[in-house]
Image 1 (tube, protein in one colour):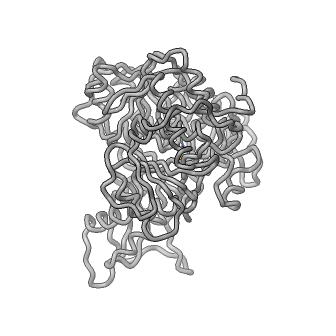
Image 2 (cartoon, rainbow, N blue to C red):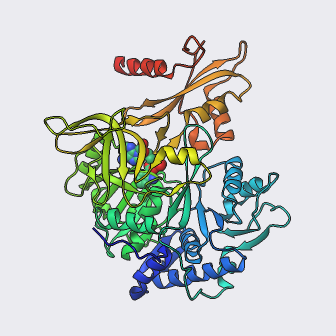
Image 3 (cartoon, helix red, strand yellow):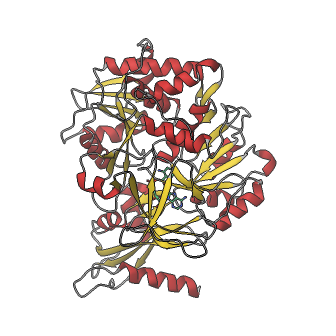
Length: 537
Ligand code: 3UK
């Protein structure tokens, strides 16, 4: 196993130091240009000075709300270098969501893409926040910011400051950055990670399992604000001096194909050797008529996470491209993948075996690890993980922190079994959370939005399995007597009031919902009905 980082450890300084000897090597390629490791070093250290010039202090939080780009990486590492704590958030949320995050994190500044500035501006209206400055990247801010909030343009802001000579003297175990993780109820949880955590994920998974080298060019369909994307396209490749391809736009099949085949202007023929995605994305690409031929790509390895990879998708991808998909399970709480298949040893339909450096338990209802059966298999139970990259806590949430972070063990919220040959097999979640396209969706949040529609009396949302074996959301809706609404209208309502990706993919209007004697909706009956219908079809 790799050695632990020293006590005084700054992850951004660590990455810059590791790459100091090959300043000419390409670090980042986005749609607007490239950045060598030498230029990255310069920009990160200028960004650190610029942050200090905004009067930001050690440990203060800054909202990072940007599309994947060179600026995202510079901003994130600039914060770490300065000892300022970036809160990297999903670019697909609503002004209400950002308003909560700004207040909860007590963000003192925000770094935002121009296209997202209007949503941020809306979040800054009204309720109390502490944001003193906004830095806009990828263009000029068009929406007016509240009085008292200074506005800068990223490029000019960075260019106006000299590179910081020294990184903040951070402790390996102090808060370095936050990510938000959704729960089934309540607001999202501010998950606090240290400087050491990304180091561990890069060493144990990026190097240890994926075997990344400076010769690799990596591309992640999962964005940087996801823990999966942050490891894939920042911590892992920059830890080994590899090259990263970044893409601001939505990872539609044609957009991903253009990168895999190196046919964008800035790629100019350079093709990724490692691709990371979620199962829904792999299924969408396999179904797309423009799927490139094996000879058009240069892949040596693919990674999947976010939801279980159905066996059929893995097999079809391997048959087409002659490359394995390495399925592994990770979480925002553990920062990256802790149980995974291995290159050259893939069994589709399983999450593989524990990543060296992590330990797993499958526990029974009494909280004790289940004993192995005579053949070595383990029956279904709750998955717990122990390893060095666990988050410190959920910010200002003692109760949910204690439920999840139990001493050295972390409760994953997943059910798992183990095969006789030691491979772990996903068996569902033990809360109500759904994973759609690899992203958490709370059925309760969707239901609460559905009943805000004037024609809707009641709603219940469940996960259904589509023809590819992937989870999609379905809403059962009771309309007000005499009221009318189409499925499309209901879906449009959801996209307007919720982060758009949370809209239910299927809608069924029903006369009533199944309920207990005390009036609780019986979602399991709806699930059973769906399963029976799928069987019959
Ligand atoms: C589910 C999987 C089966 C599982 C993530 C890689 O997905 C990530 O983080 P999230 O916090 O969600 C965590 C939950 O998602 N899940 C993830 N991967 C798999 N289920 N097979 C898989 N391969 O319920 C888990 O508890 O959004 C994935 C790296 C970093 C991550 N944060």
